Length: 389
Ligand code: SOE
Image (cartoon, rainbow, N blue to C red):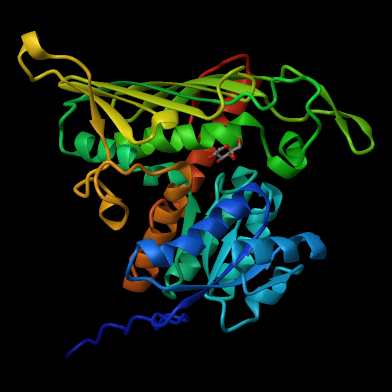
């Protein structure tokens, strides 16, 4: 008797020709993602996209933004893009409280979905999103969470060096992500300071990147942690007068990885003078790496296997075509900026869609980061007690 394996289900989505994109949200992240979709055709040869629709709540503002960022049209209702055959990719750059509803509806409608980090505002939402992503994946519909710093060439190189064993056994990691845009106590209320819309403060905004980098670079799950959070300015002026700040301004944690490595994490939007300082140091038995986003074309490498007389941290200028992502860009020595990481991210997502391979970081990765954020909050609420993830 012969058994026939079930035929793989045909993807619901078009795999040839330009892929139509809709971006939801047109402020900071919507602008960064729009710029990526505009540039990806020019720098990354294979996948072609068409900038179809920009969606936002304010008809006048979104129309203006759509014209400025190169979109064919603008809409105010995200549901309309789900009914359209010319939209293949939905890119969600809205405040966090809308991520789950939109992502699940879009995946169920057969659209490939990319969601800006953090994946969701709560663990429960993130779990529902993972379930929707798994249902969609079975139909060839892809999803990804936008941790764009995985697409910094120097950090992708760091990952490669660690994977190749150039650092030996990784034992210690220090990651800090410091900004100062809230240090002024008179800075106004925004959606990022309301738990209802943002989920959390520096945790979701910055610790999500930091925790993702720890998981990505070390290639190991985070098993347990202790943490604390703080809100320095408890009231801000909103549109209707004084309003309570319901999220953290800064957070700290010690993370224990399954590999045995230990990482310290510190994030803040109150670090006066630090504008966008993501610093990562990784110490292994055979070498160390150090990176600062404010010098994103450089990676510091200490090779402990070199002769002691000539040892020392040296700067690798990460601008060669041999380095990750850079063959698609400029000649050696011609540096990239923060915006290029989003273009690299768009290119990776498109390649995954074209080749039918699961993109990374997945919604599952987003969920794992969400667990870290929730555990830091739990630990903080229990006076720094250890929390197992
Ligand atoms: C704001 O703090 C922010 O834009 C984050 O939301 C981004 O993820 C980070 O890349 C830069 O800072």
